[in-house]
Length: 321
Picture 1: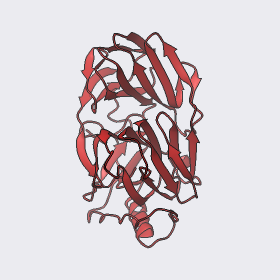
Picture 2: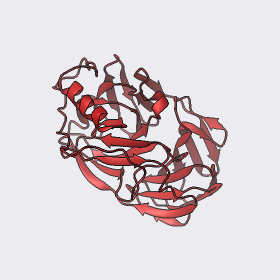
Picture 3: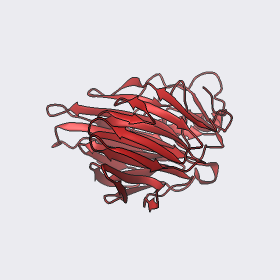
Picture 4: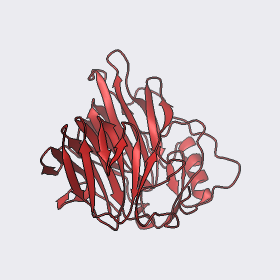
């Protein structure tokens, strides 16, 4: 999914300067952003209070939306560089096309993982014949400097490993959790997991104390470390935890995101992750001139134009609040 905000602003992210090196409970509220004509998302990262969680740099939660008589998700071809996109659905399906020739329908609890590397473009749309409801999350992972110019590629994994306990199923989307390892390719130490809890469940999830973590609520009523987390909100948890207490007052769905704090300073603007002002400006020019990012074939519509880059220089900085 693209950042379709026509008033794209500079996001200064990365660096360890503001990493909380101990457990905290910091509830993040979303910003509502309109994508196309029929999809509104709740943007949790970047947030005024928190820019990154490990290498996770962008989190949108959308739905459940009744799209029975609507076109659903319709995101025209647009560019990315320096990041990975993670498509994760609880309901519905999304048709992915990209400039490497990938064409894949992603369905609930299947991993659609696109590595932009040096440059890629893609589109996402609900199929013409689609399910009534659309509900999911779109996430970005910032690529470290050593790997941010890799060849672009797309992975689809319909089967993912799970960790189970009474009343709890954890599907490992990326990275590793309690010995279960996702087949998705990663470039920094991180974890992403989808948690399904039955009503009345009380469980403790093992964590890596060197990681910082956050939990996104997808549905239901759950308490994370005794903090109620409502759907569409995210609880930042800091570092230094070896386990996470979970309690479900109803059937609930959560996403656990974590990783080693991202050491590098980055510039994130529109759909690009770079390191310098010049990189961002050149990427925009390349997209608008039709070079470098390739062509998405088969999409019925024009590519998405980029917003104007701010007149002031874009500067890479560490983590800021």
